[in-house]
Length: 428
Image 1 (cartoon, rainbow, N blue to C red):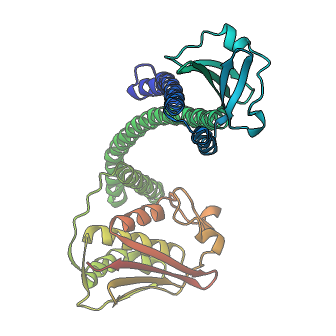
Image 2: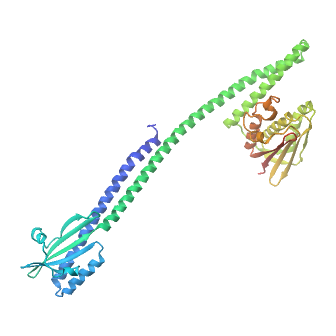
Image 3: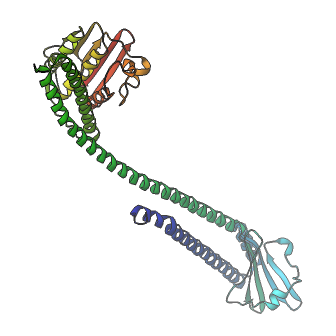
């Protein structure tokens, strides 16, 4: 299997593609996270710069406070803004998003005394609250002789949760893709296996058909010779009546063997698809007349009436030889199962199709047997009891030939009354 291109492709899809896909996705997510951090830092620095500019340029304290209030309301992640003034007596909250903190003294001065807070850059302390990142940032602003410190607190829990949800959805999608690829791999593997089995079976069937055809041909030649010698002995005056009885038995058995061989040859040709159909304008009356002529001796031997009622101008495009073969098989079958009465053939044109009917007054066929009548090697009614000879292939061959001619066959039968077979062929 390793040499099979499909299986190799499946291996690449199952093993390499998911790994590459996961790697690319993770790289994309890492890049997206870094970009979000960068944008958030730029946004924070812009906020600090804006506050610094307002502090330096505004003499009205309400302007600074109003700006802080507006920014806090518009930013989901911005939880707190305070501007602390350093004096000789300590650190006091000059402006704040929380009105309760205004003019209050900062008790914990360690961040302002120990952290490397500068004018040029915002100092960010990154922590987490279990749901997402929390930033506490500081920046110093010198306004004349006063030293101010900008303090902001940002909670990115909402943003981080959304991003985490997107990551989960991405990996869930990748997992589903991976499961699909595994299923595809299994399906392709089974397809490859069954294709190999099918090819192997086709080779065996072809070998069987060749063997069957060869054996049938080899059988037919000596059987024909035996039949000829048997006919010669039956007509010879030097053979006694007792011996002629044995010769007659030989002749009948030979004919049956030839019939079997011909059926097997026909089956082999049907299965291999080597039967060619040559359609031409065919007169139904002429075709049926040949069938009546060939089968009339059989009808007379059983004291049966064999008749036909066909319009003389009924023509359609079909293979005349195969049509006659179909009719001979069906009429012969009717004669076999009819002990008294008649077998008749009729036909008509109806709408855009030609209908041919074969009707007999035979033993009929049960509903159960009708369902399996056209299966190979199936014999129904008296045939199963050994009262009628045959291979069980005749009706199957007939059914396949009708299909090749583009027709359909339907059966109506009542036990003890008779059977009516209808052939329908669409007109081109």
